[in-house]
Image (cartoon, rainbow, N blue to C red; front, side):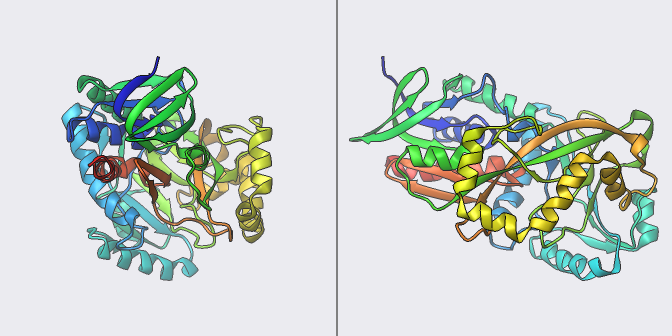
Length: 399
């Protein structure tokens, strides 16, 4: 039997749930969220560093800058309203070498252009904030913080259910097609007839788009980030968040320290190409995913461009000593003995055919469909703002 709803959302991560929540609460539509796993927020949304990003790094005027700024405020308000663990604790971005100082100044200017109360501090003030930090100069970013994102996902799911929406777990998406004024969505346990479809499929966004008949050059490449935690007796080495100055040759922020919303201190992540789109360890291998990667000219070009850096990341993945040495640039007292194995996450990195990164949130529309093709960091921070943005696009498709 075909079931019906006003809007179907593919993917019960933070972006999908936030979109469904906005559609159900603001626009009072009947929504169904279709999720292939057995629970919400099974992948990127619960395998990230738990940071509320400030918006420091993103090009002014971009989706990432605007939606991060809006989303950060929305996220803090949502956590307060629902009693979810969070703390706007601020962070340091630390330069450890002279050659990093020009990049630190660029970040300072960008942060101010994005409306942040960011300021530069000398070593004495750095150590007043973080007594064990190393480095020669830093930025203080007071707007950054931490949040329990799995808790946010559960609260969003409760809100959707409270508005008459449905979250269908173990309902893997198969395909969708237009059928007059409706969209027919086929999932592993049957079919839905809806007025519109929203795809927030994260690591599978390119495949879901193709199964909906949408043509796009974007290809998703999975990158695993691995974490350690500090031993309980060494957690006093870190009070807030401590980040390095990002390396512009590589599209990640570098290993850093994060005080976690539920307690403890996390260190990481690195960034290595995963052997499966949901490959959380080196032993997770998907022949289909590897074949798709081998066929992707964008990924082949990306690997060639960043080959040396990629080898460094693999070395850091396989060597705790190497990982500890990288962390010690930020907090010199950290040693191998202080680290405990942590979890890992897989980022969905969208690549263009020329091997360049899609450096912003990316959306695509077709008749009665909206696809979130790329939602990298700071998607968790920005999720409520992304949901508001996408829901407005969906409503326009229904009228």
